[in-house]
Length: 241
Image 1 (tube, one colour):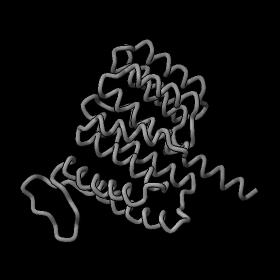
Image 2: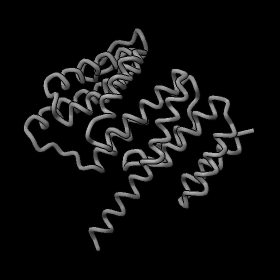
Image 3: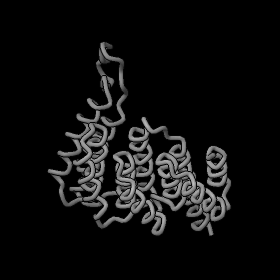
Image 4: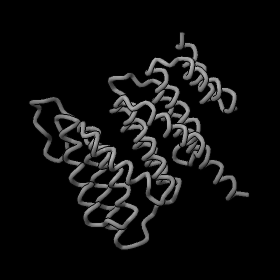
């Protein structure tokens, strides 16, 4: 009984993470969507790693995971205003691109050194993230596709979510819709049905397809008894004229 209770608590906590990510997605502005997508998908990836119990058993994966933690710290390092000197023991960068370029090199080293580990797949995902930040959409797409075809369905679904966002940002609406629909039809622990629905609705809204967006929000209200998703969908419906 205790084990079942702990499992349910973990599931509830994870649901709150994904709903929270989806809520932030619902408030994206067009000009900031790419940056926020990176942050949200990173949150989902970390949550998926915890939920899936990705603790590396092999020596190679242990080494790779240590280097991965260093690369992620680089990606999360603070930005400082241009002209402001860096503090000696606090990593910082003057722009998101500079930070992404530095992290990208670290992720590439992981892929090159440990190509057959699960950590390398995660590094490839982050290579997509950093490439998107640098405006290299072709490289980002290739990395997301590679991860999306990998064996781990949790990480693959996160990569598909990122790829759909990339397509939405680059006027490939049809491709984005197809991926969101796939995620809606085959949800995972890392990308829930409602997360994909909310992002699809936002895509429709930003693409001047309000009736399709409204249809998705109404479906969310119908299918989800929980208050978080219903509240988001209700709020977004009031914004559609």
